Structures are given as structure tokens and as C-alpha cells.
Image 1: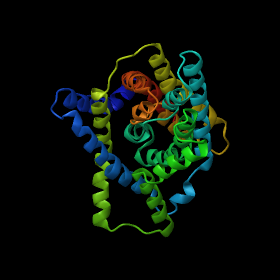
Image 2: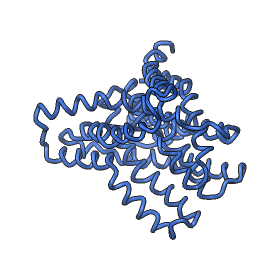
Image 3: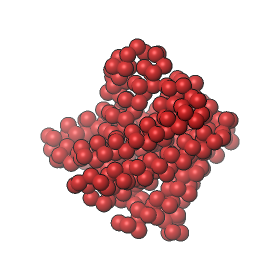
Length: 313
């Protein structure tokens, strides 16, 4: 167990470094947006492109995994939506978004470095591409659209869904995925200088991403922490990976490594812009507190999941 913990320590040191430079004022919080945009629009799309642009990669897209991961996420989201509504009295739209925080992960900034520890960078990047499809083409658009229509902010559900999908289609992450798959179909390979340049960017992406996680946490508010925050944290860090593991294990044709990879991605804290989605429904205080608590608690839960993953592979 100690060996596994030591493997994960660099991840949290990078998060702590990002937290320190922002909390100390060395990097002003207002600069986080620009750094985050650079990571989101340059580093991560290049990482995804590199992961899926190998010849024949399109044939490796595992739609069974995408469906299973989405189904497991929806189970957790539906359950926590009811908890937020029935037990804590949140309105429908806010309850759905809070449930979404329990069933969708910070896959790019956090999940990828964690999964790479157990599976290696290549296998982790492949599973990341599948999860990117599940979260950005299925889970997040449907939940955001349901929340918008539930609060009657954007007309019908279909109108909300069209708007969300149009925004997702313009996402740099999706553009990187589509471009990489297009290159894989043609069998083309980038020239050596471009490949080396991409390799340098890919190497920098996890470092920048994890420091950004710490920086965003330093800037978030933890006011309003309480039982609902603990419930969201518990569901995100424990129920979500458990649901993903059980659903993927029940599907035929998925090997154990793939199931474990899905579990690890599901076991990291919620996606970075969770608070922004929640703010549209008046839940930003609760969402930001949950994000801070989940990141802190993940120091224990992720090491536990990594121990289970590494010892079972």
C-alpha cells in the first residue's frame, strides 16, 4: 500500500504546488482563467489527438464501454438527484446539476494522470478517449439540458439539448478527438519534428492540469459545507467508481484492465467547471465546497482505488 501511495504522491504535490502559488498570491487568481484556457485549448486537445491518431484507432473505439460507463453514471446521477430533491429540498434543475457532479469526473485534468499510474500512458489515453465520448456526447449534454428545461430557462428539452450539443461540438477536446480519428483512418503520420513537438506538449499537459486543479481549489469558496457536501463527495468518490465497476464487469467483451481503467477515471473528483454549471441554478456555493472536499478526500480514496487496481492487474 505504501508503494502505491508513493506513486500517487507526485500528483498531489503538483496539486499542492498549484494551490500554494495561487493562495500565496505568487500567481494572481485572475490569471488562472488564461492558464486554464491554454491547457484546455492547446495542451489537452493535442494530448487527445496524439492518443487516437494512430492508424486503426477508430476501430478500437469500444461502444460497449461508452454505453456501460454512461449507464453507470446515469444511475448515480439519478439517485443523487433524488437525494438532493427529497432530502435537502433543492429545486429540480439544481438537483440535477448536483447529481451530475456525482456522476461525471475531472477526466482530463485528474483522471488521466491517475489511470496512467496503474495502466500506463497509452492504455489510459485510449480509455480516456472513450470516456470523453461518454461524458461529452451523452452524460453532460443530457443532464445539462434536463436541468435547463426543468427550470424553464431555455424552452423545451430538445431546444436545450440542441444548444448544449452545438457548444460541445465546438469544444477543443472534441475537435482534437475528431481530428485524431480522422488522421487514424487515413493512416497518415505527422513528420518527425511535429511529432516531437506534440510529444513535448503531451508531456506538459498532466503537469499543467494538476497544478490548475490546485489553483482552482485555492480560489474556490468552502462556505456552506455540511451534510449535502459530504453526500456529494461520498457519491462522487465511492459510489460512482463502484457503479462503473459493477456495470462494466457485467458487460461481455470488456477485459479486466478496461474495467479497472473505467473505475479509476470514475474515482476522481468532479469536472472543473462543475461550479459554473451549478451557478446557473443557484448552487455555486454548495458545488464549490463539494469540489474542495472531494479533492481533499481523494487523497485517501484514490490511493485505495489505485491499490485495488494495481494488485488486481
